[in-house]
Image (cartoon, rainbow, N blue to C red; front, side, top):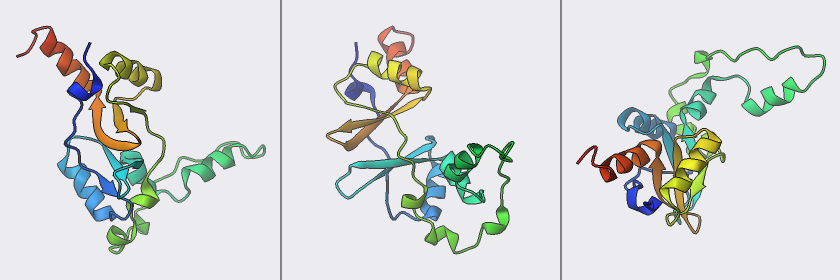
Length: 159
């Protein structure tokens, strides 16, 4: 069985903590991935930014406040957040940075694990992308497509 390091993508675009929103938006426009890893100066993974985090700039309350409101007994329901486009200003593109958007909720695997183990982690956590970490440093990503592609190649379905 293949190892993760044999079929992961190691040529990945990463952001730093201070990467501005304008660059983050460009990444999502220009790349096939819908997840942007955020690393420190030592390439250690700090978190990730997905489209969910990008849309958070439109929401009047952070998700944590909504979760807290849901626990209050006399509040029947928390209304769905609407897109608040009035909050968008030209300065946001440089004022909002990756560190303010990232989430630390991501799933990872080590490069020497098997593709089968990667698949299991993806299935258990209902995700299609794992960060590949070696001593906390981001060295690649492996997606469900990477796994399927390698299996198809191994079985001669594709060349």
